[in-house]
Length: 632
Image (cartoon, rainbow, N blue to C red; front, side, top):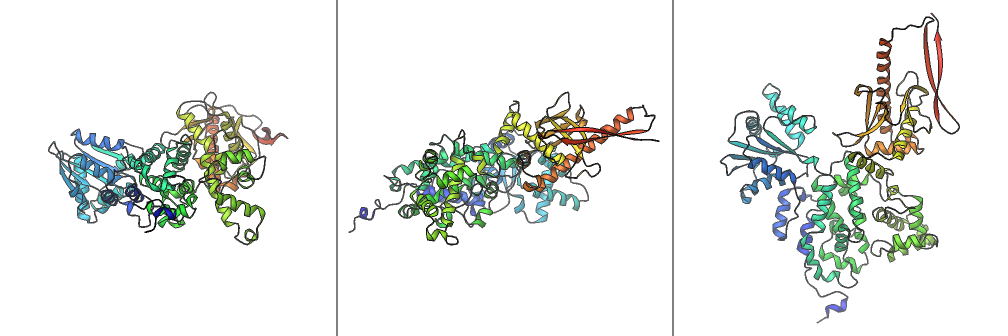
């Protein structure tokens, strides 16, 4: 009989955490997308016989309290796909004694008698009701419980935003009226109104943000089932299990939580850019970060594949820093997930700086960079300066015949992209020569997040940020390379408000609000984004606001730093020109009101003052008045 140890493998046997890893895999971005359904994940949990991934849901507790209070009315659980509508509905059913087997029966409407004698009608997904009569009856009952006198029944309806609004509209049209629930429900979704009557609306799409990601990472990476890995043969001695390694890096035991902090920054910037990342996508991201590997079946490792990866020297193919962006997946499958599309928008891996690439390409051989290379690259022996990376680097630099052929450098360039991603997440915050945001498409995202934090905490905003915003505004308003950061020029071309070159100063205000006039940066309570508010006269009626998304903020900062407006984003430029047109219109209205109050007349005729913007050699702009008098 052959000794198992002679092959280099530990004694054969099923890895102790294989059932847990198999269950976690069911949350990942697998090709058949069965994990899109709550029922599939529930079934996988039963087969694996492991503890579930538990996420705290303050919304669920509020729903339970609403039902337990005995208050008449109904509950609408709204959200987009993946927000957990079915999960919350099922959890509410179970909390009040609902049988799990009855819930598993394939039918869209279920009934449960509550302890207080009322009947709870659960609609686990409104879109599953295909029969029009049944749909109309369901919505009719909802209306009676909310606006009528039906107190013996409470409805719990789970629906997408568009689905519930569309069905209410169509039902109203068939009944020859405007449905009384549609407008109040829509206003509640838009944060422009209160829920109608006795309807409690829980919008799950408004809960996904940084703390959601932190909770998901903790629920996955700190799950008690990982304790079984302590006796796994694939983590003994010098063997590195990429699954366990990625789990440890997610927990932040070596970097003080820097990885999770940077990933949270990306999620927050994405949210402010309009991306909604449901909990389902965050769970898929977490599973992919831990299990992802370029050479694994379907891109996700199972315990049975770890030995093959180790023996082939391909552990680095499971880099958690690549898995964040779905680099382990076929491009089409990664693009099917909103979370990977949102993260791809940062261009991390493709974007870089001269300093960072100089370090990664020449650092091993340049004595000036050797210290930084050792600290930031060579110190990571798993995903940093591995033998494979250093070998590919040498072939690239020494210009071996293979590397000079078309596509011959592809291997090193692919590894270089991977190292850029790793550096983004691992560079210390105080590293003077290598700024991690500089390795993304959003160079000023850090300033954007700091701005939001300062406004939320009612602290003064950074003067450098204020100056950059003012300079960017001036350069867009005028189309000139002015350096002014102490005032805002509201300029025109004399006629066409959308003109990109405007040398006539219509009015100017200070870049800091003084006496109710000038620029102020505040938080918009509805969008939770910073807003530039430019007031031409004191009072609310004299101001115009411009909502700052991360893209718009980046646009203004880059223009302030010297980029031409049209080279970054034509969409942002058009948005800024529209803002400029609103300011010019506001100034015109203020002048008209002022003229109506002025009874003095010029005996020699009307005098027209044109303020031309001129630029000094230092780049400082100023307005020079020219009086044009027209005789009668």
